[in-house]
Length: 398
Image 1 (tube, rainbow, N blue to C red):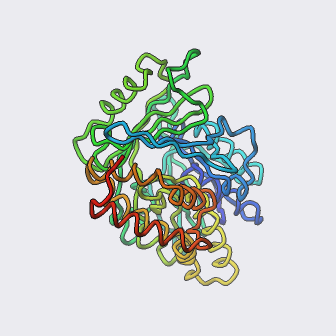
Image 2: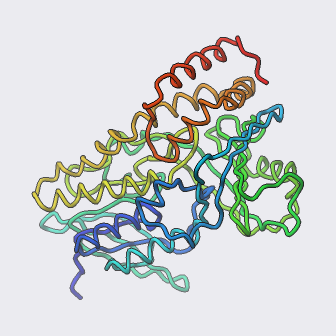
Image 3: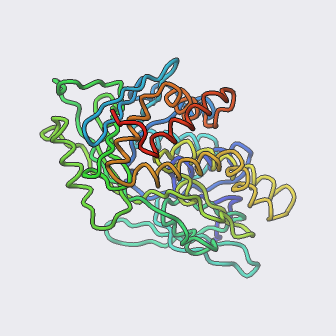
């Protein structure tokens, strides 16, 4: 049997992989999208308006519209932040990811279900992607030639381990959540249009716990980089606290989430990483869907340039463009997480800072539109001095 040859083989069918496949197929390239069966990433499912607009996400995929966020401190200080003039869309990853994969196939991508094994090389140096299917306990090996391989196979990417220098220089948070059925009679104080974020060491020593509405269900979870911390126990405690310990559990999921972009995304030849495999989840917030899809679009552009010019150095353009557009935001959020999430005393002050209207406005403007807002310089100056006062303990956390 003649081995199939594709312009691009995409390993991984999450938002980044499905987006690369859709973009490349839309350019008229032959694309194979390889994805494992039944894999759903633990995720709060929040997507900003810019993602909805940039990637033409239809309204029916939004299972809820979040119009406010509540920050909860270790002492139960609660700060409600309205999302003025807009909303954050909430998606169920099981259906959202599948819709993206189907959109890729409608654009012309060939879809295969299987488990990636390795990248071999043909006699002429062309990459051969090897995977296997498993039916009834019987493994069937498969393979395909590829002019370019895209690693979209998540944190601790097997593609990255095989092909990318510096693949082991990432930083990760272990995340776990439980998707539960929204009860017919919600607990007191529940608001199906509000995302609740808990900054408390008992729920996470270095990240946060969350309760995100998904219409008929909720995502309740937490994350940490600290080994030995029980995410399941913390999630159970959070469920008890909010009165949902007895709510029906639909599914439980856990996975590592990267918190630092890898220093290199390509092998200088014919492999490039996107999404979690490239490490593009925002520190502090843990937001990853938008950045995954943005990195995928940038990778598609880089691959097209590589094909058009036969110059493989264009593959590095994906990371350069991403860091140019989002690197400063990642740097700021990384500093914020390392400082404010360190202990409950600092978490208390962090939530107190979130009462400030300047902080609220600039934070949500940056989140909704994915840029650091410079048009209000006086607000930035005020925030700097307010942060300094909190750092020096000159302001009482209230």
